[in-house]
Image 1 (tube, rainbow, N blue to C red):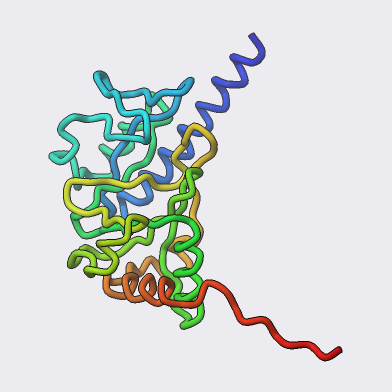
Image 2 (image 1 turned 120 degrees about the vertical axis):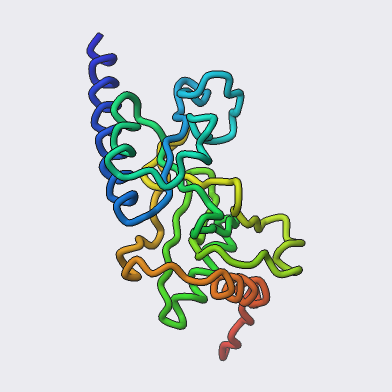
Length: 207
C-alpha cells in the first residue's frame, strides 16, 4: 500500500513537471504534443497502440493539433504523465545519432564556440535540434547511425520518461539563447566528427 502511494505521488509530481515544460515550450511556439508513457514494460496512453520501442502521440489526429495554443496544451497533461513530444518538419527538425558520434559532434561544435540544443535518451540516442531545412548529405544518409527526423515524425523532449530513465538535455536551449541552428551547421559538425581520427598517435617517451 505504501509503495502504491509513493508511486502515485511520484507520477503526479512528474506529470506536473511535464505539463509545466509543455506549457513553456508551447508559449515559445514549439509544436509540442503528448505522447505515450512507460508502464510495466509497455507504452500506455493510446488505445490500439502496439508500439514498444518508444513514445508515440496519444492523439490519432496529432498532425491536426500541431500549433495548438498553450492554454489548450495545458489541458493535455491534466490526467497522466504523458511524454513530451516535439512534432518535427514544421519549423523544427532533429538529427538523431548514436551517443559516440553525438559526443564527437558536440566536441566539434564546442571547439568553435557554437553551443546548440542537444538532448539524449536513456537508450543512448542523441538528437541535435535544427531548423527545418534540406535533407541529409549523401554521406550522412548512407550512415546507419544517422537519421533525420522531419515531416510526419516526432522526437521525445526532456523530461519524458522511458523504461529506464528520462530524456535529458545535453545542452539546454537557454545556453544558446533559444537559437536553433540550421541543418547545414549540424551536418557539417557531424561530417567533421566522422572524419576526425578515432585514435591519437602515441607520444614517444625517453628511456
